[in-house]
Amino acid sequence: MKNKFFIALFAIVALATSNVNAQTKIGYISLDYVLNQLPEAKQVEAELKTTQTQYENLLQGKIKDFQAKYADYEKNQATMNDVIKADKEKNLQNLQNEIEEFRQSSATSLQKKQAQLLQPLLKKIEDNMHVVAKENAYTYVFNYDAGQGTTPIVLHAPDDANISDLVLKKMGVTPKPVTAAPAATTPAAPKK
Image 1 (cartoon, rainbow, N blue to C red):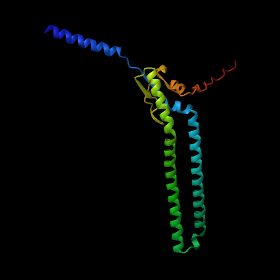
Image 2 (image 1 turned 45 degrees about the vertical axis):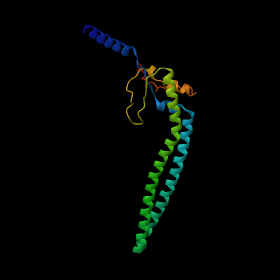
Image 3 (image 1 turned 90 degrees about the horizontal axis):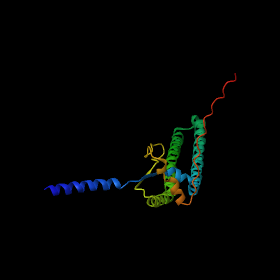
Image 4 (image 1 turned 45 degrees about the horizontal axis):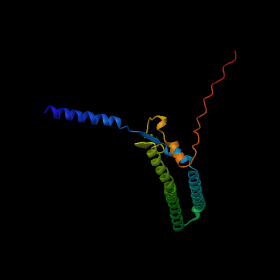
């Protein structure tokens, strides 16, 4: 009976010490930081800007058309018979609906295009992150960025756990130094 107790105690101590020796290495990556430094991201941004400008130009054309027809309606409504007036009002309502539908569909289309264009870049970053994590024995890697306007997933971590620059180097991109905010200027001391 004593032997079984000592064997069980030894097994528990051995398991406990082996778990202490198995060290977990945790790192994090700033996806936005890496993405913003990739030359391909600038191409994606330019393409999205071009598409957005095209949508905005089309929207402005629709709005001008509506405004011109509305001004004509306002100017001539006193002289219109009820049938023509009702027809013009219906046309104006339809134009307003078309403008709103275009706004919504162009915004959705732009979001889809952004996701489509960013997907290969995000995949490239993810693949290189996995390689860096394996090469540097990271057990877990978190994304520092939770998304625009949200609280980061990693609230505190040592700088040496940030593998963003390692991922950029693995992708063949030289990380650009982050520019610090300009130091606050102190007012000059008054002359005595």
